[in-house]
Each structure stands twice: as structure tokens, then as C-alpha cells.
Length: 123
Image (cartoon, rainbow, N blue to C red; front, side):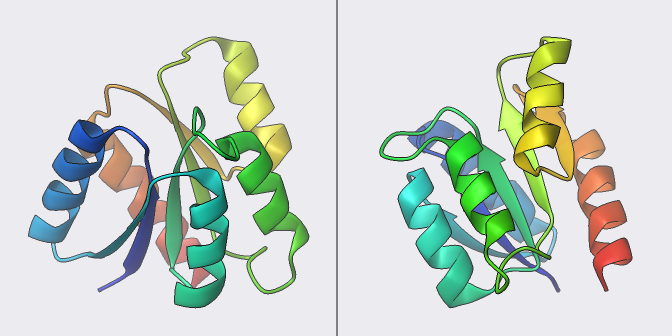
């Protein structure tokens, strides 16, 4: 099954989402800030990254731009996860290099469909 990197600073969100993904057979790695997310993306080579955009140390916007500028990680699909549901936030996420955009609270069924679509097109 696919390896997912979940970059999320809120412990409750991180625990809930990682448990739900593991229950569905995904191998889940976690990072608690953008800098750790970039580091783990480089060392763990996940199949897909779920990126919270409001992160400490390095925010999700900057972490995504960093990953998409790096030849080693630029092809990994990134799904933006954010509580900001404005259309301008969606555009900002896509401009930063995110491949998809999901709002919080996460609607698991929709997120899984997005993930499957991105994983299928990446392989």
C-alpha cells in the first residue's frame, strides 16, 4: 500500500487522520512542522504528502514550494489541508505547487478519493 507523509502540527488532527489512514492499509509517516515535513519527504520518499498549510517553523506554503523546487521530491503529489476555505486559499495552494486542496475538518471519503486519484496518476 502507498506510503503517506502527514504533515500536521495539531496532535488531535494528526492522531485521528493517521489512525484512519492506517486502518485503510496506508503506511503513514508523520511530521509536526514544515521543516520536518521537507526533511522526511526527502528521506522517506512517500508516495503522497498531506500538508497542513498552517504549520510552525516553516509553513505549508513554503514547505510545498521547497519540495516542488527539489528534483528529488517534485513529483510527489501534495494535498493541501487547511481550515481556510476561501477560493483565494485554494488558488494560493495550487500556486505553491499543491496538486489538490481539501478543507478541514477533513471529509475522509472525499480525501481518500482525491488521494486515490493522485496516486493512480502518479504511478
